[in-house]
Image (cartoon, rainbow over the protein chains, first blue to last red):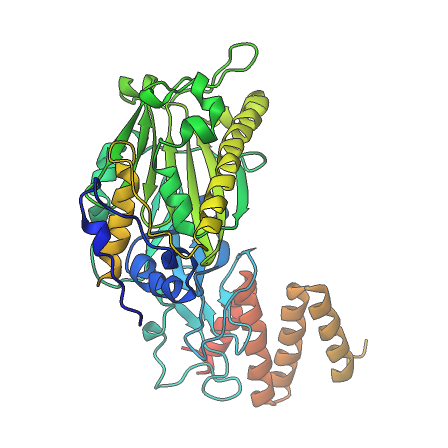
Amino acid sequence: MTKINLQAIDEDIKKSNGLPNHHYVSKKIFSVEKDKLFYRHWFGVGFGRDIPNPGDIAPVEFLGIPILLVRNHSGEINVFENTCRHRGMLLLEEKKNAQGLIRCPYHSWCYNLDGELKATPHVGGAGINFHENLEKKDLSLFKIRSYLFLDVIFITLAEEGPSFEETHKELLGRWTDYKKPLFYQENDSAFQLKVNCNWKLAIENYCESYHLPWVHPDLNTVSKLEDHYHIISKGTFSGQGSKAFSQLKDKNGQVFPSFSNISAKWDHTSEYISVFPNVILGVHKDHIFSGVLIPKTAKKTIERFSIYYSKKDSIGESYTSLRKENTEFWKTVFKEDISVVEGMQKGRKGKYFDGGRFSPVMEKPTHIFHKWVADQLRF
Amino acid sequence: MAEPTRNYLNVELLEAFNRGDKKQVVDIYSRQGFRDLKEGNMGSGFFLITQAYIYALEEGFCEASFLYETLQKAGREK
């Protein structure tokens, strides 16, 4: 493997460079990142809203790994490898609601929604459905550790290692006010963008506020640059907050209901955090949004977003117009970012760019992300 | 009324599969399976009942428990 020299990123931000060009264009680095930046960590693969009902199963291929997102009949979410324990056949190719078991299409071994192997037809000969050398209890689907946070389904392929709660103790503590039921309206509260850039550019752009006055001029009227502050973690997330949040209002002055029992600080504060490697989150007193970035190649990324509300009323008919306006607002903001993240991708085709420099004052959150990437790649 | 022939059942089965009518698939496998058992054709009977059982399990049909009991009593399922 190419030796990765990332020493320049260790420096203090005042002197530091960013990640060099090949970290955004190289297939080889992209492949290394799968293991070192994703599989070993907690990364987002989808949303609870992808499997809203008991019995829902969604097959997902994420960075080449076939997985099943499953909501069992008790409503609990589990994630399994989408691979039969028999001959390694892909179990499901399309989303479905299972009234019964998951049947492998090859030899029909069947699993329940908790991943337990329940039937092995003809395995002992025609009409004989067991064999002394095959213990069903030893052949459950491979379960992947998962955790639902702000409706994002996080998984890790590390069989051991810290839990999500341990890994993100700092973030969970920071946003404990949002550990509440979330309400999602499937008709108008999601959008998806295809972006021609490396996934890291979307993450690093999201976590800093330096670009806001130039790329999102409409925000200048409601939330100026000086209203923002950095959110700095010990290394698992970074982001920015605004002290000038004001709720979206319709022409009659109607606003979405707020979350119950949250700190008064959220009256005028909103926060936007990149959770490394690939999840972006935003919280406000009346709604939150979650985004999962799906790296497709070194130069292509799909961004999936969902918006959630504080109360069931907010997803009802009387808020339809305001909800659509809110979705359109956030979609516009994220679409405005496309030109810069794609522009940075194009710029990285150049021969001489050395990873660039950071604003020591304005880009600490971005530097933290680069440092995190560099630290993981060294091991 | 004369019982349907195996050829007729094959056609009926394929049509049920094409319609995605798993209830009918379970019914056809099950009917023929029990018919074979009645005629002493145990191998074919338990094969067909297993087929019915698996599709019933997949779809969560209530027939699954009776088919399971049949197989289990005959030492064909644990």
